[in-house]
Amino acid sequence: MKAKTFRTWIEYLHSKDRLAVVDKKVSLQYEAAAVAKKLDGVKAVYFSHVEDYPIPVVSGICSTREDFAEALETDLNGVIPRFTQAVSSPLPCKPVDRAEAPVKENIIREHIDLMKMLPIPVHHEKDSGNYITAGLFIVRDPVTRKQNVSIHRLQVSGKDKLGALLLPRHTHHLFKQAEEAGRPLECAIVIGVDPVTLLASQASTPFGVDELEIAGALRGEPLEVVRCETVDIDVPAYAEIVLEGQILPHVREPEGPFGEFPKYYGPRSDKEVVQITAVTHRNHPMFYTIVPAGYEHLLLGGIPREASLFQTIRQTVPTVRAVHMSAGGTCRYHAVVSIKKRNEGEAKNAIFAAFANSFDIKHVVVVDEDVDIFNMEEVEWAIATRFQADRDLVVVHGAQGSKLDPSTDEGTGAKMGLDCTIPLQSEPMRYLRVRIPGFEKIELEDYVNSEAGVRSIHLEGKSR
Figure 1 (cartoon, rainbow, N blue to C red):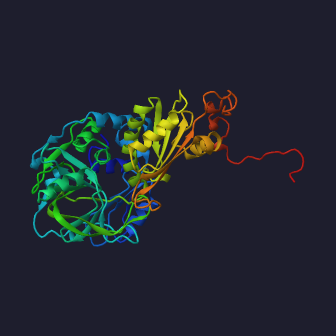
Figure 2: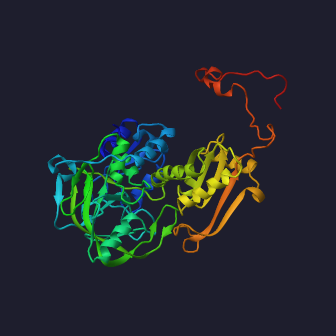
């Protein structure tokens, strides 16, 4: 399996010339993020010589859809079905002994100083400090014993403290329960896992589903996990680094600003605080960071959202063919939906279903199945030639949206849907796409001999 561990995936990328190795000394203050951003969507990057640290930094391990497809050992069309199937059929994890877990090769319980131990970068100009951006944040429900996995931005706010942005989802719910009872919530932050487990962490699931079990289903074998040293949490045994800790009750400290996925800054405010109680890591660990608002960040959030969106729309419009959360819409705000329309009005039903799936979704475009929804030129063409605002536009006022969208009023704003499907009773020739017979079968090398070099040509008459 190419993506069995973080290391096997890095080795695979290197073998395919998709890993840029930077031996030049780089700074954690913007420079590492800048280089990784330059390679965004092109290659992963391995910084072997980070200023003041012996630990290398890695970024961009999955910055294209093709990367995720390869990690899942499928093609582009198979990603969403594979993910959907795994969400519906989680596979329990396999506990292993501490002696068998590489992440236990080094255990530190005392004198923890995160910035002395780990090369944690500063990414953007106005970021308030060094941020962990690719840590799987794992907590456990004390009642059901099920774990929840998510990713949160984590600001280094002290030697052994992190400020955490906990959005009102499953982790926040479990923390509020603990806080109301006057106790901390135990947690573990896992850095450097395989891309399949990373993707599984972002699954949109009902409360009580363990995303590590979804990772097992995606891998086709149980994910090996090991119990932490100071908290009652199971973590991937082959992770690079694990930070153990507790979210403190009734403690809030300033966190932010921080450059987020919409390519704007999330504001500074008082946030929850994580007290670190132990650090474990492999011998010669690698530190993994995600550059916020890069393709890796966007796709990591977008692909699981597409799987959830597809399932939601299918309940209303069974003939939905595919969905796409576009990069231009930050893989959160814009959805393109392909359907095989059988009844008038289905496109508008698909629009409302998309809005119901996630409050983040702001604009929805619905097209017929002949439009390639992953080609935004095709989508724009459908808007240009199959949409009339007076009959095909849906506008919803005063709806809940994303608070990270600066155009909203503290998260409240308008939503828009565009029905770009062809009317069922239209004349056959009216919307018939032009095509050249035999175009698909043309192989250019049969007509253009690249090995022949530049040949002289003879033109009839004058050239001017």
